[in-house]
Length: 85
Image (cartoon, rainbow, N blue to C red; front, side):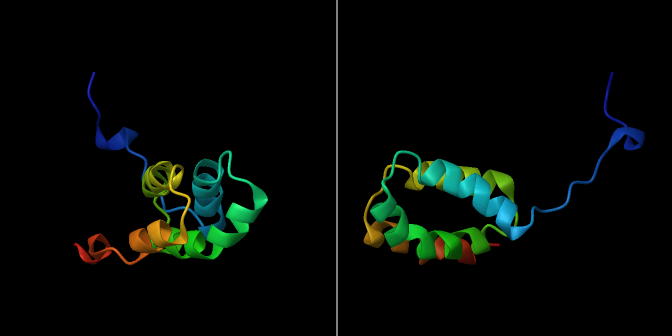
């Protein structure tokens, strides 16, 4: 049994807040409120760059889950990897 065109579903990108929900649930897991407040603005900018892709939000959330400094989060935001096509 294979996949045919009759059974394909085109999925759209997530809305920004849906993407943020996925990212933040993972990235801020076990972080205290002070850490969250310090990192939230950078996190929201990172989520914008995910362009509504849930796998990107989940992957980056997992990457940043164990990073506690603004510098580490800022490094991800400013990474040249976003320029790849």
